[in-house]
Image (cartoon, rainbow, N blue to C red):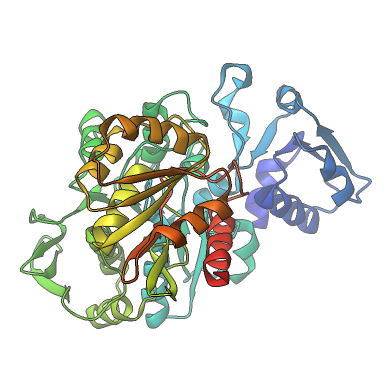
Length: 455
């Protein structure tokens, strides 16, 4: 990998664009292996100067930090930096990233997972299953581990599970050997000019695959199917569906998940067996993981064992505890309406729902219609997204639904405590981003759990 990078950066003026977690990782890696390399760093945050003590570096900060891109031959872009807006239009050929170079070098070893929702659960499940079979597996990407941080752990025989966001896929030039596209919903509309641009970024996962690669897709998702129709692909296709048999892939029949390799069919898992991934959305995630593990050669018994023993992830319909007879759940990861709807369907008996946060212009009409027909009695709104949802729901609300607006997160939790009856369920599932009050959904979930346990 080091020689590969040396050939790429040799003689080029190099810029690290964005100095968050991945930007810092890129800087550490390059400085460790190329001690004399002159590096420039551009970031809006002027405080990054205090975090670096390096005489062989140039730092560009402030509101106009993107203007410096034109001066460089190679730009390592961090995932959170948007180049979609008109003022940031640049030569695509000079943009790269850790994900781009990691995929180019390790493609044949990578299982790449993307989708609007479920990618953390699915990629974590795949990693958990493979680890039951072999210790020679690494997990990188959008979960918070920059790919360059794990290079020293990778051998030629390592399996690599990589969770991929749309931001990471936006500027890739090569796809993974096994690619999974879980679903497409409205998300990150503050980052992209159109919803179609966002979809295409996700679809890069397979657009840049080779004919010998494998594409695993949700056959129940109409947007994915349309992209496949519009782009004539030559791949090995593995579909999965809740009810439609697949020539190659997975489907459900009589509560059993069946897998076909194109020659024979095998029952892999009985959904009546004890496992922690509840809800139809998780059945889809399980099927995607099964396809990937079958392709990479994991035995059926290890796949079944992995599904049974996987504990699920924090902030994903996570049971916080029962206090004064009320069951509290943390679903802070739910930043879009579809995720909130699935959480309510999964828990069935939600009495109180906490909704809202940072407003990215997502369409909430279908969520409001769902809530109108649901048994949710108390709906507590937060932030600008909550304010917009509240206006929409007030026009439709049933007389037996209580609608509240909380000016702080603490007041939202207290309102839930006061209005949720014993034996009821209170769910935090915001259907909105957290950036108005928190740095990310993880912090929002942690604060919620702390407040609930403090009640």
